[in-house]
Image (tube, rainbow, N blue to C red; front, side, top):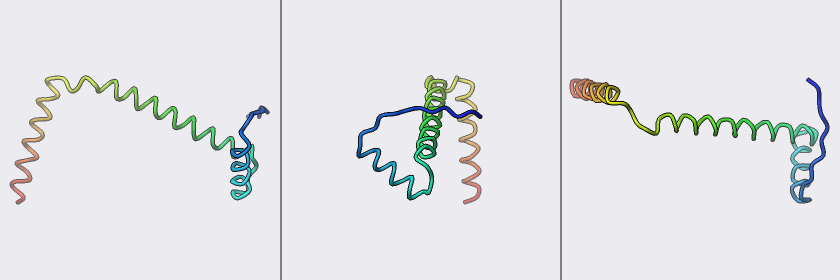
Length: 84
């Protein structure tokens, strides 16, 4: 995969923290920034997916599903009562 060079501007304290961390991790600053951006992008994608899932389920179960859930609860309750 081809690499692309870019320039970014950071506040000096953030740059110094990144530089120290890269040294402690024994990696280049470029690698540190790449790892950080990869993690941020993964977090962002996961957040978007969670929002889509939440939107899909925000209307609640349909009536048939609600009936199945209630039947499952009754069966589970009976099973637990029989075990005790």
